[in-house]
Length: 562
Image 1 (cartoon, one colour):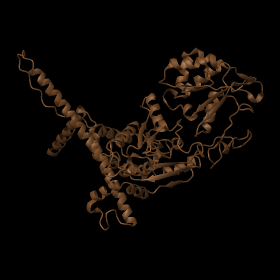
Image 2: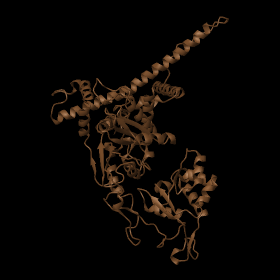
Image 3: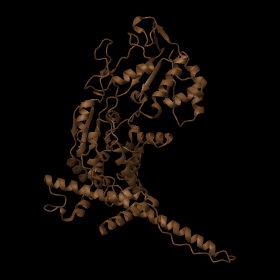
Image 4: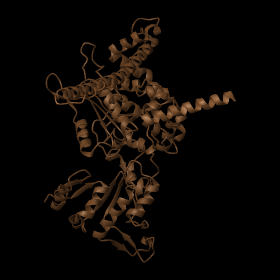
């Protein structure tokens, strides 16, 4: 008789009554977040009854994060400890009388849980072994039947089940080493060295080639507001893939055949699910009405670095380097899954080159090859001929000695690439400025119309004896358009997040090495850093700043007189 395995899911944001109904019907596999599961343990009595003497396996996926105590109030570790306590209360505990199985509290024997614990993570360390032994095994000393068995791929092998290795109990390699050998061999790793002021244009150049091939790319950024800004900016621009006569207006930077989405922790759970389904099922209809794969870009934070099984990812692009070494492994783990090939690219500033040495030492990531910046621009300039010609015109006499397009030599190819960067940077900055001006104009028109309506309403009242004042014309006091506001917020959030690295990386990510003007250019901002620093001040802060300058000036004049 074939048995049926009925799975169920318990996650925050879902209807609790529906989840209770599924639990009452019976579930063979229960997948849950720690907080939601603990909530049901407290409020749903039937869950404990269903688990009574029936729990066989307890699996902790992303175990390093679940057992981490770095967050507020112990992080999720405290929740995991409470879950284990509830499971122990409704399941029999096996006791052994062997001397070698004595618990840490002494006595004639040790205790053994009635279920098996499984820890799953790409970054399993010795510290996690000791921690999981204390939490999940009640500090029981290892025995032949009560010990951790580490299953991991052989060095430099693919992550397929056939190549996995289960060490024997007496194997000396049966211990976690570090996060080394955590990356599969079929994952090609690359890095691109580019200065801060050219980062945004280089990002566009790289994505042009990928979207021409209808590939799917996941782009990791450091902050939520930066994700929102880049998504909105790319969606707001006109297509650069078509010719000047058939540019698609309002379909995004790469046209209607490219899906541009975003994902971060500030998005509600239900909306996140919709975005993931949309990204996973991105299809486009061609002229024959057949469904085909279309290009897709997902801008995201580290919320997408774990737990997502996204099929068919061609490239993982780390536009902002990770703040922790382990996060590098989890990020690139979104590609090359289940034996498939994949590629990962890391953007670095020249001052951050030492990060590559840390990766080789700590992760054992193998060969991380350099991607040619000039070759990337060459490919993009060839695909977007109109943008390249526009850049050549903008450069004017800067490109002397050669035909339009730069001739056939390497110098010509370099000039064409630089022309592409010049034109695309100008388009990005113009998009931000145009959005700002249009927003101010619409806001002023709306306020002026509202004032005119109030005036007409006053004049229509014949019984009004007192003469009412005529409303003053509206003067725009808006801070700017949405793109400009997001760009400024992204600029400041990037500067705040940049030095927040773990100790091993702080040396290579020093804020003093940043050129603030170049960083502003990477967010398509033409304002100098000094202007940006005061742009987000309110009226009171600006007044205090001006008063402070006046006081300094008076003090200086008094000292001069003395």
